[in-house]
Length: 230
Image (cartoon, rainbow, N blue to C red; front, side, top):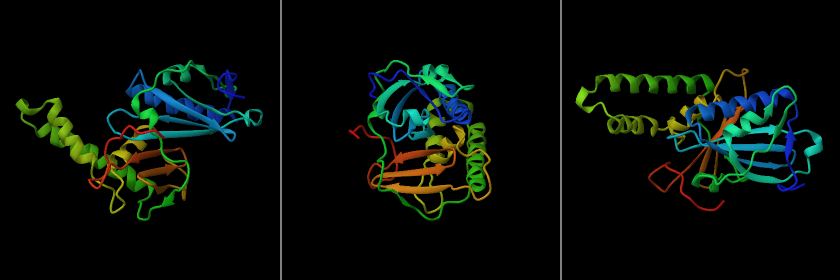
């Protein structure tokens, strides 16, 4: 089946549907007009989204029913319309009409070639690091003189804090912040497989609930996504 013949898909179970719906709900909470790119193949769907301002990609995968194993699909759609189409009681969802995606939808991480990067703290330590950074931002914001408490100054403080790296890993703290924001760092079973991976110019924070990918932009570190074909 191709993108022109597929009108609906069914996830492997209702838990997969609920998790995907929760992920989409978090994306549109930050951006009501959010778009997501869907790639379907090998019996699974991967949904790529971009939390605003953090310059990362959030990736949620879900298994499909066996009858969809032959489907191959790559399309960009409205996150809100996709969320509305999900029937959590059956795991089925309809495919919304394709939309013209924002520039980031043309720049996805590689599918293979990933290797693990050592030194990543555990999930609890990552959550603590984000909480400490949020608290620091609020303290510094409150300390600003009224004349300087504007968007530009707040953005400057935010960039300084979220561009810090996690230990010696090179992973920017904003990637961890994004993981927490979209629910990928919520409490998980002990010894859950949380890892940091690298492939070419990309780094990926992987948890049982999804991944956050960020792209390096030269020797200066990890920054905004550049627009190049995948």
